[in-house]
Length: 113
Image 1: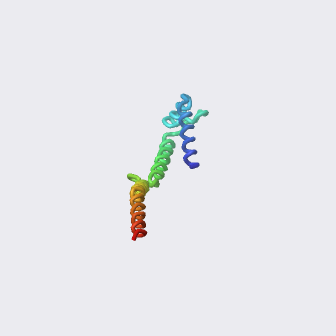
Image 2 (image 1 turned 90 degrees about the vertical axis):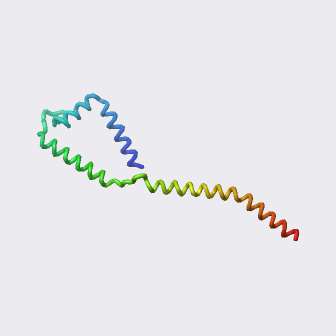
Protein backbone atom coordinates (compact mmCIF):
# COMPACT_ATOMS: atom_id res chain seq x y z
CA UNK A 1 0.00 0.00 0.00
CA UNK A 2 2.84 2.38 0.86
CA UNK A 3 4.53 1.63 -2.42
CA UNK A 4 1.38 2.58 -4.33
CA UNK A 5 1.25 5.93 -2.57
CA UNK A 6 4.94 6.58 -3.21
CA UNK A 7 4.64 5.75 -6.90
CA UNK A 8 1.50 7.86 -7.23
CA UNK A 9 3.07 10.84 -5.49
CA UNK A 10 6.23 10.43 -7.56
CA UNK A 11 4.24 10.42 -10.80
CA UNK A 12 2.25 13.47 -9.72
CA UNK A 13 5.52 15.24 -8.86
CA UNK A 14 7.00 14.39 -12.26
CA UNK A 15 3.87 15.61 -14.02
CA UNK A 16 3.93 18.89 -12.08
CA UNK A 17 7.64 19.42 -12.76
CA UNK A 18 7.27 18.31 -16.36
CA UNK A 19 4.66 20.95 -17.05
CA UNK A 20 7.11 23.69 -16.03
CA UNK A 21 8.76 24.92 -19.26
CA UNK A 22 12.11 25.71 -17.63
CA UNK A 23 12.35 22.27 -16.01
CA UNK A 24 11.56 20.51 -19.27
CA UNK A 25 14.24 22.54 -21.08
CA UNK A 26 16.86 21.71 -18.43
CA UNK A 27 16.08 17.97 -18.63
CA UNK A 28 16.26 17.97 -22.44
CA UNK A 29 19.55 19.89 -22.37
CA UNK A 30 21.02 17.38 -19.94
CA UNK A 31 19.77 14.33 -21.84
CA UNK A 32 20.83 15.41 -25.32
CA UNK A 33 23.67 17.88 -24.81
CA UNK A 34 25.14 16.79 -21.46
CA UNK A 35 24.85 20.29 -19.99
CA UNK A 36 24.75 20.18 -16.19
CA UNK A 37 22.11 22.65 -14.91
CA UNK A 38 23.39 25.66 -12.96
CA UNK A 39 26.99 25.23 -14.16
CA UNK A 40 29.01 25.77 -17.29
CA UNK A 41 30.11 22.12 -17.30
CA UNK A 42 29.27 19.82 -20.17
CA UNK A 43 29.62 16.05 -20.02
CA UNK A 44 31.40 14.28 -22.88
CA UNK A 45 29.40 12.02 -25.18
CA UNK A 46 30.91 8.83 -23.75
CA UNK A 47 29.72 9.72 -20.23
CA UNK A 48 26.19 10.36 -21.49
CA UNK A 49 26.34 7.10 -23.48
CA UNK A 50 27.49 5.19 -20.39
CA UNK A 51 24.71 6.79 -18.37
CA UNK A 52 22.12 5.68 -20.93
CA UNK A 53 23.62 2.18 -21.00
CA UNK A 54 23.32 1.88 -17.20
CA UNK A 55 19.76 3.25 -17.17
CA UNK A 56 18.61 0.95 -19.99
CA UNK A 57 20.27 -2.09 -18.38
CA UNK A 58 18.67 -1.32 -14.99
CA UNK A 59 15.28 -0.92 -16.70
CA UNK A 60 15.59 -4.23 -18.52
CA UNK A 61 16.66 -6.04 -15.33
CA UNK A 62 13.74 -4.53 -13.44
CA UNK A 63 11.26 -5.51 -16.18
CA UNK A 64 12.65 -9.04 -16.43
CA UNK A 65 12.20 -9.54 -12.67
CA UNK A 66 8.50 -8.64 -12.80
CA UNK A 67 6.09 -11.59 -12.61
CA UNK A 68 4.31 -12.14 -15.89
CA UNK A 69 0.65 -13.08 -15.66
CA UNK A 70 -0.91 -13.48 -19.06
CA UNK A 71 -4.62 -13.36 -18.45
CA UNK A 72 -3.95 -13.08 -14.71
CA UNK A 73 -4.78 -16.72 -13.89
CA UNK A 74 -4.83 -16.35 -10.08
CA UNK A 75 -7.51 -13.68 -10.34
CA UNK A 76 -9.54 -15.73 -12.82
CA UNK A 77 -9.48 -18.70 -10.45
CA UNK A 78 -10.70 -16.51 -7.61
CA UNK A 79 -13.56 -15.15 -9.74
CA UNK A 80 -14.51 -18.62 -10.94
CA UNK A 81 -14.68 -19.92 -7.37
CA UNK A 82 -16.81 -16.97 -6.27
CA UNK A 83 -19.23 -17.52 -9.16
CA UNK A 84 -19.45 -21.23 -8.35
CA UNK A 85 -20.23 -20.42 -4.69
CA UNK A 86 -22.96 -17.99 -5.77
CA UNK A 87 -24.48 -20.58 -8.11
CA UNK A 88 -24.54 -23.23 -5.38
CA UNK A 89 -26.00 -20.76 -2.88
CA UNK A 90 -28.81 -19.93 -5.35
CA UNK A 91 -29.53 -23.63 -5.93
CA UNK A 92 -29.66 -24.30 -2.20
CA UNK A 93 -31.92 -21.30 -1.66
CA UNK A 94 -34.32 -22.64 -4.30
CA UNK A 95 -34.25 -26.15 -2.85
CA UNK A 96 -34.74 -25.20 0.82
CA UNK A 97 -38.49 -24.45 0.58
CA UNK A 98 -39.04 -27.71 -1.30
CA UNK A 99 -37.02 -29.63 1.31
CA UNK A 100 -38.97 -28.00 4.13
CA UNK A 101 -42.28 -28.88 2.43
CA UNK A 102 -41.12 -32.46 1.93
CA UNK A 103 -40.05 -32.73 5.56
CA UNK A 104 -43.36 -31.24 6.71
CA UNK A 105 -45.37 -33.63 4.52
CA UNK A 106 -43.42 -36.68 5.77
CA UNK A 107 -43.94 -35.55 9.37
CA UNK A 108 -47.64 -35.10 8.69
CA UNK A 109 -48.01 -38.58 7.17
CA UNK A 110 -46.08 -40.13 10.09
CA UNK A 111 -48.37 -38.47 12.65
CA UNK A 112 -51.51 -39.60 10.72
CA UNK A 113 -50.36 -43.19 10.53
